Image (tube, rainbow, N blue to C red; front, side, top):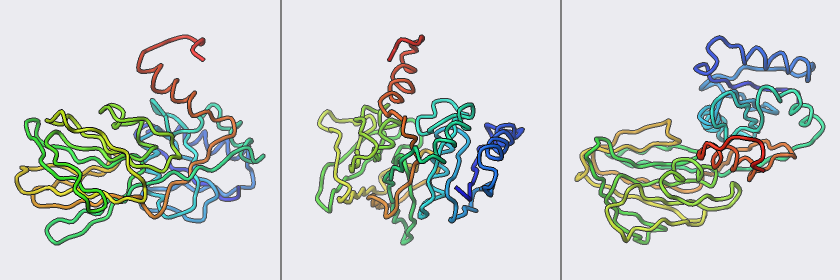
Length: 280
């Protein structure tokens, strides 16, 4: 590990206390390494590791920033849930020593590519968690059609639809009643948001398949959102093509990482507000 980047969330660390502490830990643990602070729009592609200081939102931003590179990400939780993170600041020194000793694996998490075609224009977006098509004003209902590999699947009326990666299956998708998928499964989840029909059921399709959503001018306005962070307002005819992105996100996982332990602690027990140390 000779070149290490740090991508931090200034909103969670306005005084840069966590950033300074990370620099101190790196100087102690990896004194020969060159350390770079990575900013939005200025990703260095020759890093051996990118430390992401923040919570899940910061990690999602970093994943899109690092898209197309081979740089592995290690999330350092200074946020709330931290489901995507692999360590916290208190354990960072120990975690880095494990990395130096080779006690880790790299998971290649799939990402989604969305091609938005509207008004004879085309835009491309990427997402690690999910792509969501959702209504704008509270009273609106979205009307659209769903195709899989150009085959008509169903017509939808409701609040919207979620297209999720396995990584994002524990986020908005889970809240909307979608299935949890193991992070390295090759699949795309399709979950309707409050559909106005009892005949609508959630789908899970292969990553080799292409999903197309067509929406017309009958909708007053709606939004296309990537990872809940990038939003496009749509008011006219539009086609959205969603499929597995050409590149994924490399996540560094320490050898003692246990997905199901994290799932219980971060989601199930926290949601149930269970306290105590006898839950495992």
